[in-house]
Image (tube, rainbow, N blue to C red):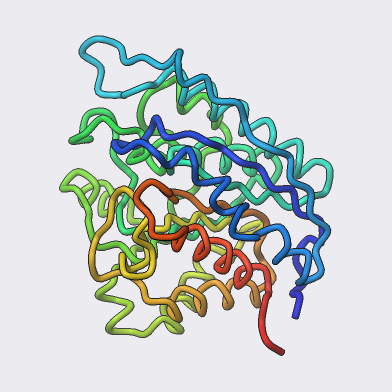
Length: 303
């Protein structure tokens, strides 16, 4: 079954690992490709074009002395290029499917969508909050900061990629699967009033109720929903190939059912799947999981 989602999909790879603390996630886009994501989408009935990868000049990366933003120069450059590419794809009437790469690439993906869809809801699947700023980050890794940047918080070289008039609205962001939050992130989420469905809520309410509320929050009075899926939202037994594993994550059916419900809402306008690290994986188990989850999000059901 193919839901009423844009029939033309453009795949964009972003082989960036400079925002993470562990190397190897730059191999994620090809791992998901190798797992057959393009063929899976074509079998559902989509027209798919793989646009290749955004260039990443890793050799030019550096960190300013006394800065708490590692590799800022290249991460800013890559996200700027990605933002332009996503906007171009959407302007051509295509659905951008971005394959990462670490989660800092969400700055580029979502800022590109926001240039086309001025009011955007975001459902953020992640074990972590990714809402640190340079002042609150314990590591200086920018993959822990994209939500803050998209809200207009943090370093100017990153927030300018989004643009002053394009920042996300906090009331249309929903977290799913959170279970490892820094103290600064907990404070920021409370201060911003962002909706967070932790694993406790999934256990307590059930995934159906959680997703019904999430889709309502992200979909009401917006021009569509973007899904940002960090593979560490899943339990490590399902997705071992990610650099920031946290036990007690979503199980196989919870994740698929959650994405199936988003597909059925027919409000999806863009998506990204990130943090697949083949160097930490077992026989591309996590890359395969990502490819299958893409299928569920885009309407791959038995009947």
